Image 1: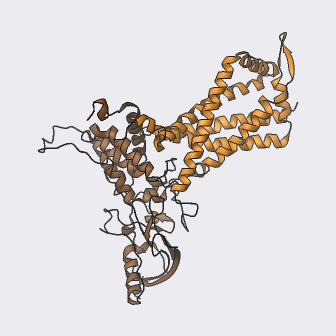
Image 2: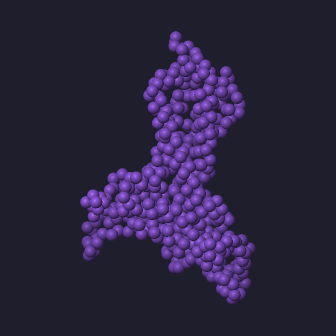
Image 3: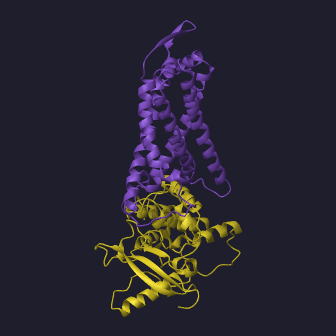
Length: 227
Length: 262
């Protein structure tokens, strides 16, 4: 019997993929709250700016939450990269078979492209924070309170056609990534049973289409509306 | 050549030793009967090679009735040929047409080093078994059949997992070279039954640790293993293993000798 089983958990194949799974599901949850916030764009500049202002007014608490989010993101990314490198080695190198065909009943385009859609999302997140959160700082006055005009920054950003296309491309990557990742996370945690797993898969696909579609819709809406 | 017999072109992986360079070599087999099994077709080819004084193709086989798990081979890019619930020995030549070119390669993974030609060393899966794929309780005399009640659906599920013949097709087909379906089937089978449950935590921890150290990959839920498994074992058994492992990692502890343990 190996001593210190719990310590081994965090270094084991199953332990690490369960960490990738839980962090992935937490990020899925974050995306829902982010999307809900984005829908204030449809209500109007004041509603959107007031929502952003209320978040910023949390001050230290927001800083802590953002820190937790960054840690979750880093664990998810770091472990996924490490597991992927191990998997390439374990399959026996890049040139494994002269001919390899999939049965069509197992691996999918989504499952095969997980590392690539993940890397697209990493690039997206970096550029997204840079151009919007750390973007041009305008101010506006709502109900006598001076606050950041994040609405203006957002609308200005999406005037650019390449920026909008890149955003939509990243959301397609997000849809592909979550449509495999959602159900896979349940499987990794051990929540797969013939009784309900088909529905987990369905919810995963629905989540992928609705959430990524929602983000992409708002980006296109901003682009078409103009400044 | 009698009616229905075929002439086939084969490209077979030849590699004299594990360390040597290997390559695909072209062979032609004539007059193959559609009733022959894939292995019998290679037997015929080997007979021709031996008569010509050439080295016959090395490949693993034993029972030739689909239950031992010895035969392997990637046939046209799929483990055991990719036919549903079929081992290589049960693939029959009627599935191919006259003039077909068939590519035959060994199962490949870091944990499956090549021994010669189509023969690979699959002892890694035996080592995973030795780490805990058994029960060590003293059973004594057989007890009354009705003393231990097991619901039929549970018994059926355990039997589905027990169907694993340990052929390694899951590892060969997995894009990550992972042995999780094999290991999941073993852990799941024993965790479902009362005889296996007492040792389940220790078994899960030890088998997973051994699997990892032997260089098998990590599961990313492609489910290609399930699709190529000749015994049709479901990745639900991997999920049960994941549950057992998670539970064991956080709740199971054995005191060391210095702490007063055995």
